[in-house]
Image (cartoon, helix red, strand yellow):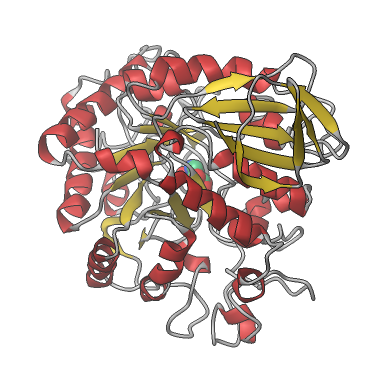
Length: 510
Ligand code: NOJ
């Protein structure tokens, strides 16, 4: 297990929207290099970079055309190596986004595979044996290539699924078992991509749709076996490299598959969703909604057993948002977002901050979809740096995606020295996480709540964090009292209880 993870705080950068260094309207790698000081200033010591590979951008780069080449619009492979080096000099690690499940339908492997003539790539993707064979339970593209067969797609139609085999064979004519040499060759091809970038200085990968490799694999046993093999390779060849999975099943992802971290994703009705969103952050069922009517039990019942059973093997990762979901500003107010930040950066695991969340960037509803974003486009708008042209994102006349045009658009410039800003809370709490060993990734956790009640607290070593997300005063019974280390709102400790102001957070040291 790479030791650096225990004190890691990640910043997710969506490269096209972060900083445009050459005025062409789109973010780039040199732009990220210029902003490394900023990332460091937040207290983040690691970056997850969304895909930077050559791509037709039908899905923002999750449709890879060349795994080993940086998209020209972002720069060159040398620029990326330069980013690795500069980041490392500043103590910042960089995870690339690995997309192992599918490629673009313009990837050379696919261009070969779709030909009638057989080649070493004929089984790199999943093709049926005839265009008349298109079982409805699979998402197939039908009748559009020279080869007499239909092919499986993973997500969008432009993303043919790579072939890792089928755990349960239901169609003998074309389904291969995961041990088939051609499926093993797919695994080896992805390992080769990983080695390529690790050798150049990458510190690991965020793994896209990590649970989706082997098909008809309900229990994910065969998929986990592949990742276990990848983990063995890392342990042996790159012991400092880390992988975080887009899986949201820590027992499978961490304990079985060997991921170092697993994302707690926003799946409707799960613990994450019930804390922060419940489909829509405006939902009164979301615990952090000031009108909240839910309680933290649903979260605790799901999270705590997962935390207990995986804490010795890896980390569950909370994130403020990501590029796939509406920014939390879509429905919650500034105070709620401050409390959410306090929660995410004081819980165990390895936390992730999505670019722009530190200043409360707004979700831009109703934008015309860009690069396969659809409703996600509103969470992917350019970073807001200052009051200059395009809010400092680009000197170009037309950024590839419009910046927030509202009069009160938050920027780094106007938040940085504002004592009442989200930026202040985010940076303060991250600094506390680095300062106290008790707040590190693997520090202890004792989570305390009363069923049916929203105010709650948790103890980590000598620190206790109290939360009242409600828009009214609330009281919690507690045996703890101590020195206040940090607070939002405020609270008073009386015998055996703490009386908390509306939407408040208090951290005490015993
Ligand atoms: C998950 C990624 O986060 C998302 O942005 C992408 O569209 C799909 N996987 C498909 O790769």
